[in-house]
Image (cartoon, rainbow, N blue to C red; front, side, top):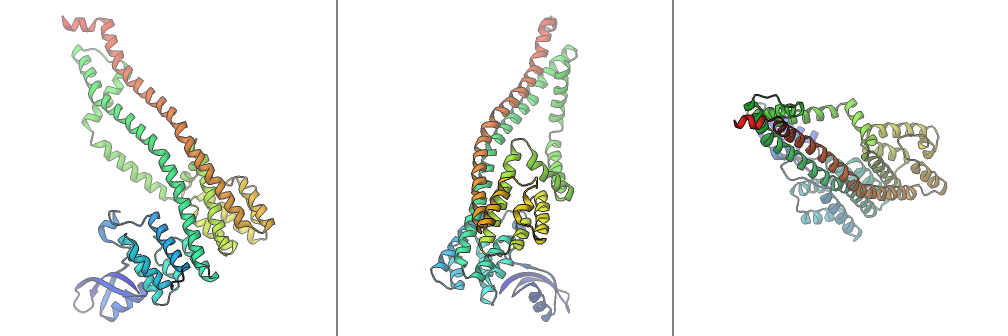
Amino acid sequence: MITFVYSAKHMKTGESVKAEVQAENAHAAAKLLMAQNLFPITVTNKADQKGLAAMFGLGSRISTKDRIIFTRQLATLINAGLPLLQSLRTVKGQISNPALQDVVQNVSNSVEGGSTLSAAFAEHPKVFNQIYVALIAAGETSGSLDKTMERIADQQEKDAAIVSKIRGALIYPIIVLMVILGVLAFMLTTVLPQIGQLYADLDKPLPFLSAVLVSLSHFIIKFWWLVPVLLVMAGLGLRNLLKTEQGKRFADRMKVKLPLFGRIFRKVYMARYSRTLGTLLGSGIPLLEALDIVRKAINNVLLEESIERSMGEVKGGKALSETLEDDPQFLVLVPQMIKIGEQSGAIDEMLGRVATFYENEVDTEVKNLSTTIEPLLMVVLGVLVALVIAAVLFPVYSLVGGGGLDNAGR
């Protein structure tokens, strides 16, 4: 049984009611409310709705690490011979995250009510994605649920490691950019206004560069509040744009074409495609079904279209390797290794090797990224600081050379 939070109106008195109800699904919960003369307005799974704090991301959140630990612990207990329901309850007692505890409790209730484990997980798509559910279903069918869960945990760890490495490589550039912005803000708000005031007292025109930066300085000092407003508006506009089909397509195209980052993103996608497809096939999921799951999980519109086209050609009788050979979205090693796997009957093993190769490549690229970006940022910092210093010193030298300061002293 699953716990649902509901709001309803009493059909006779019109009184508003907010409470909880336990049922097998949302439809069954609504029927229970109707039987009590309550007209349901909202019926929400308690595990997926944690009120205002969760709505703004302030509540307890289920991280990838939490999910990996849960998966490994459950696999260990099942492998030890404990019944599934007892394993779920034992793992729940070891979980420190309240949100995950609620989810596992609901999963236990569903399993106790006769649901399969995969169907119980499918009721929580925000926690257990389609790949997770499909692999669990395959493990249940093949009778190797513990091995399947270990495989899921391995895949999640590798995906998380790639994301963590990329984020780690971006920390240094972000810190340097913040320093650059801090230096510019200091110069614009403290030094340049004094230069502007000096020229105003002498009734002399500022040099062009200095005049531009002084105007910018006055704008920032006077309308400083407008800067965060514009940044928030730009952020919201960009987020809404990326939600559109054209915006997402543009962003996904830029990911693989950006200098320095493009190669990394392409290799990340190749590793994700190979690792996910190899895991699905190794768990006994049919090729077309596995490709459809990978298509939804790849998170790139261009690759989604390529995989969809590939599926159509596979349905028509072509080998998977042939459908990818001339596709510009796929690096050449992927179809080559898949072809070897098709010939040897070990396609999942070959895909695992491809994934490992590209994961190592990503690791190397990310390490080189910091080395490459550091001198570029230093050049940018040097140019910006040089411009500001020129805007400060050039007027001073002009005054000294032209006798402006002597005339001011007399």
